[in-house]
Length: 126
Image (cartoon, rainbow, N blue to C red; front, top):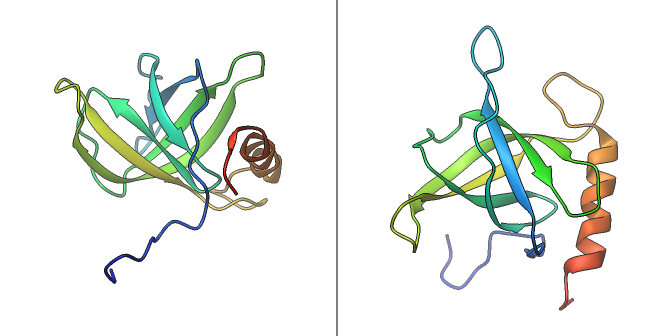
């Protein structure tokens, strides 16, 4: 990475009183959702959250995002990084969303539309 160059192209923002659950995708079946956990921030390209377990980089997971007064949003995602969080008890975890479209292992286009609406609503500085 070039010094001072920001890799992210999407604005990150917080959604007050939001949370998420995730589940790992196993080889033969999807596992159950883990407990509801704290969302740190989100963008149209990915999000970060507090996690109680170590997840391998590249692991596919399904995120179920809970936004106040809205239906939950499920997003097929891939783990990009993990590091110790500031609370000392959990791991800060970053994921990117799988592509949007109609193919296998893709998120529905409607999910991207919802993320765009959230971006318009919560990003303060453009």
